[in-house]
Image (cartoon, rainbow over all chains, first blue to last red):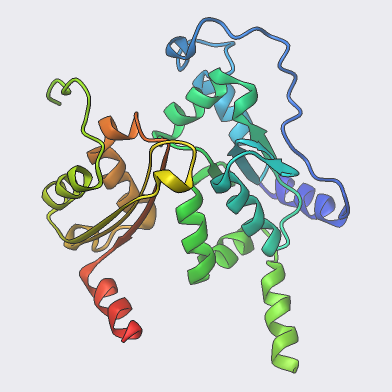
Length: 162
Length: 95
């Protein structure tokens, strides 16, 4: 746990255009249609495979499109909220690139929609929940638990000085 | 679980009825946002005492479970889930 926190601090120093997103190779042909996903090993949609993705980074987003080019208003909203908080270093996966993953992540969290946000491997919610966490201040607290200082805190400070 | 009916009725009024009954809600607003999006979309506000003591995630899960069949046919679904107290406060601040 502390190891990943350390990694996060190191990574957060590498600001700039180092946005990470779904760079998983998709060379393996999906086995069958989405109905086959959710079980067994090897498939992109299996519980084990999804679990690995969810735990690949302290902040993980499953979305349509990628952070530079979201292909859905709700996915875009999640990207914009994270940007507001200065969270630039996160792992995003584009479910439109992988039907197995698209179904697999829904099975994994028992949540019917995309986008889905995970903090420290834990499912937080979709766009509505992230938006409300942003509005009620919970998101600042949750990010703090991950060792991430929300940029909004600094923005508020600047306002106080004025 | 009963066997699901062939196709759920996807109208704002039908969804409203389901939410009112299924969650013993005291207030439900359903907006059909389909015209603003590319496919069947709804935005709902549900006020229910059943949400008391539950996290946002738990509340949304209650709604998702109730509308599981409908959600298979809905492209986008926005929800706000409030307790009667939160709803009262919100209305008060609007006046």
